[in-house]
Length: 276
Ligand code: ADP
Image (cartoon, rainbow, N blue to C red):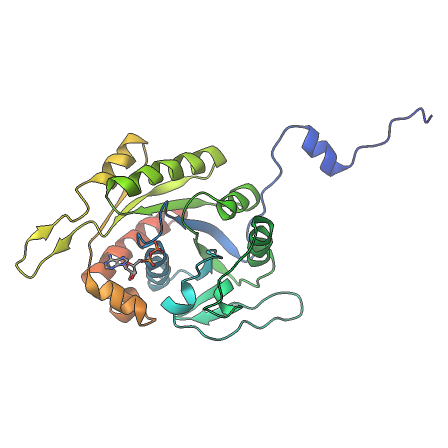
């Protein structure tokens, strides 16, 4: 029997020290911000694309990573049908509206459903964060899938995330899930930048304000969990139309009242990471 104990490898020592392993930043960007929602259909991708475009308008260099492996939206919302090229080592993101974009939807047929198991999703996320040639970015905006599944876990455990924004509509069923989302990010140690109330109200032709999904639900949830409330975005048919046409509202009409809300939010986010 050998007398001397074998040396532990660095990796094993780290594991046994009980400290969590170092998280890798996405190379090529300064900050990574996740856009999350607890439920589908609340406007998360609409928010992610418009926020990315608003940050670009205030002179940030921005990337958009569509991490929704099962339901990618960026190809449609940015009207991209090209396939990304590879330099042999890394995938080159597709640049549209001056935003560097990557989505599983660029690599697969749009109508083919992704019937992938968890480990495959994890491996796709690793490719998108480590094997894409993101260049000189200030921010990568990550459009997360809804819920609290494998993608969120992979990101939170392995990637250095600098903040998360949770988007919701104000009705009770959505809010229940928002609470779960808040707890998940808190548990995983990801800073929540704040909550956004999307589709909060509608102004009719009669000029009246209709609070279709209820009033102040998201704001109250933010207060309950001691998180910042980042603001309300009303329902506006122009938002849906421009998204469907592949040119989100901030790009199609930067002077629109909704675009102004996004620009204000972008300024707020920029100033929390950069000194002006
Ligand atoms: P998610 O990513 O949460 O599934 P989407 O961003 O795809 O949601 O939005 C769902 C639908 O709601 C889309 O048709 C989108 O155009 C529409 N939508 C999102 N936000 C607004 C808004 N503020 N006003 C009007 N329509 C909106």
